[in-house]
Length: 469
Image 1 (cartoon, rainbow, N blue to C red):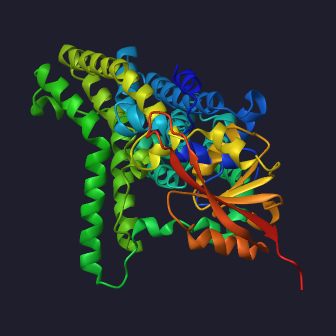
Image 2: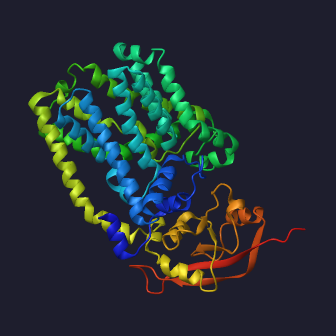
Image 3: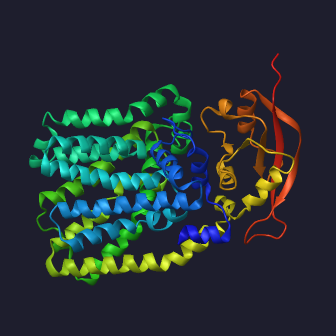
């Protein structure tokens, strides 16, 4: 329904999806903006089948969410828990605000991280139970795909291996010589992107500033700032499922003493994955001097927290089953209640970056091509990817796109929103590509759906190839 609502309203998509619209026509080993390639590869595949549209973007996103949640369900069942426990685990993961809300109208690589984290858990459990050569191959493929989905999945992989090594029965599986099969499979999957990253370090580290790395104010103050920001990110990410599980346990009259009953190895594995993941994150934070964390970065690290709660309830008899039922009921009710709000946000957007969904891109494209066809559109921000909804053959470039110079072809224009001048960064990329601004810029007033009657200001200037000297 969500893509159909967007099609009916005629609106565009948010900044994360519009970035994918720029990239999904190219099947490259790596992309710009410090981003891993898997989501863009899957976007290329999906658009090759279904064309370039909002429906294609949503097919991709919801397919990945479905695979991730289903993998969690199957993994919990394979651990020997009841169907109710598996459903509570799956719905618990759905309760993360980043999943139940943010992923409905934004985010891309985090969606791939959700999917491959669930697949990775399933592959690990399959390996621990089967110990076959095929299971080692599949585990290696899952490791490689998880890394290509989101680079911080490396923390989850390390946490899984550490948790498995910490238990006697699972340790034997990880230390078998066949684990080399998994290692080789993972490396083969990652080799093209690892090589690309090694030869494009600027693209790989383009957004490293987001970590707020600080090595000039003393180790202790930096560490304290990092710990406080990490704690805030953990709270923002996990508060909703934690509160709902806690309320469900209180309603079922589950006391603290009951929660401390003996843990089976299957449950220890899940809790230790969480524990090792947080420990590794803190160590990396202290070693790097990072002081800023966005809550969505914690998705692979805390994703299985609802799974741990759900399997703990399974050991508590009838009270645990009551708590699980309450969690399932609340999660299902929230999923239904949030639907109309999600649909409204999809077509209305927000007041900041999300507002770009309301721009009438069909009108913008017609105005840009009024004096003749154009081959390339570039901008200082990847909102402009929405223009490919009007013309799928259009080459759209942001300043982070690798191979910018080779892709910039005449006739070309530079467009930017709201302000009199574009960002200096995009002008520098254009100059490096051998192009210059051709004449003065002019302004367009483009209608906004559900917006002001006078429309939104879009500035346009033509670009031309600089004469070789």
